[in-house]
Amino acid sequence: MVLLYQSGYVTIKEYNTDNLTYRLDFPNLEVKSSFLLYLSEVLLTTTSQTLINYPNVYDALVHNDPDQFIKEVAKFFTTVSANPQPCRENAFVIGILALLYMSKDLWVDNETPTQLGKADITVRNRDTVYVIEIKVDKKDGEALSQLKDKKYCDKYIEDHRYDSYSVVGIGINFNSKTREIIDSEVISIRVK
Image (cartoon, rainbow, N blue to C red; front, side, top):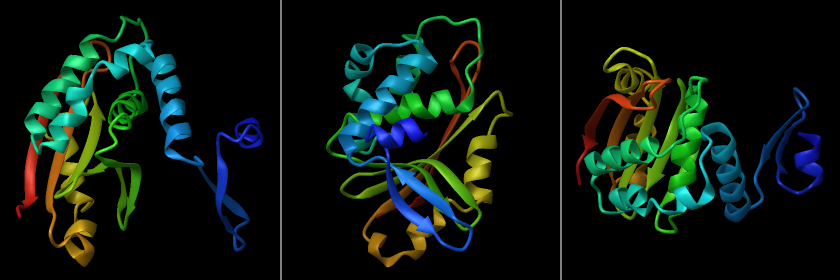
């Protein structure tokens, strides 16, 4: 982490004097995108060119089509090279984040904090907030169930800045070995 800080890949965003901890973040979107591309290449044994060739992933959310988004994500993961090691959840999250950060039309965040936990990915376009929960090798419905149980969407329902936004929850469950989507669900929390 010291090397990332000293090289400028991360900056100090916050210092907590009570417990003497730092919160680090990327200095800008370009650095964050390039770092996610690099991590995707390493964790998923894919290439930056492959990631760049999937604009339909973010276009689906720009055009409010979460079902198409899931199809495009599934299509992307079929291009990832075979690897004898099963993928962990963070590899899928990083891969999707790298794809989404290619879009200038979306606001994208990961590990979005809420009162009961952190949503894996949050995406906002001009009129909709998508809260996405990723699971790996879990039972059907578990991703969306966590999204509901932990009330990840509530912050966008209760915050009046988002009153004009629709709020949609997306749960996706991957197979760690085949990298296929084995279960996905979409739920409209609020429709505007």
